[in-house]
Image (cartoon, rainbow, N blue to C red; front, side, top):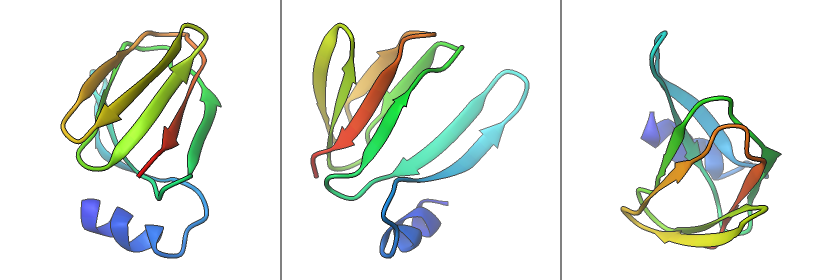
Length: 88
């Protein structure tokens, strides 16, 4: 799945998302970015966790911004509008 995301990113102008695991209890998505891409304002009804495998992104919500680097984790609060910007 990660190889597919990377391959699709070569020609994409927006983030590429693919489902890894989807059950009643878990919905694991892989999302790939190129520098400058933005996952525009959205929210999730569930507690979520952002895991960054490589690169750097900025997570922004009404409370501020957090820069994450490779192997960082960040908990996303349900029903909070947020966006993610690829810095690398």
